[in-house]
Image (cartoon, rainbow, N blue to C red):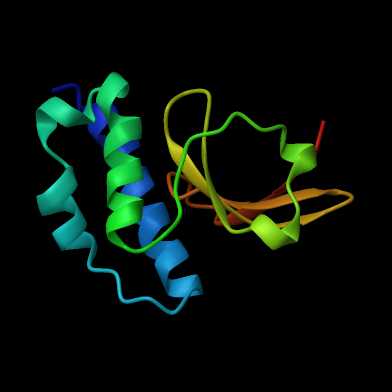
Length: 116
């Protein structure tokens, strides 16, 4: 399996763990890896389905939607967003200036991303 594809999927599992912490839910990322990180199912066409399954296993409501960042409200946050390159990030808050996004693949931590 392409290592990059696995790292993209892994970023989604880390986002789920962070979302779980924000909701005060115990999340065992090793258990998520064992249950959902099957190399055959981390391919892009299956990774989204596996992310939904992992989120639902934690008790989250989960589905994939294509939504403009500007339409997100704090009522629906945090959300896990899929970047155009395939990795996942956690959007934790929204304001008129943009959204606060935790990119788990970056060492810089959370950053404000403009709506534009």
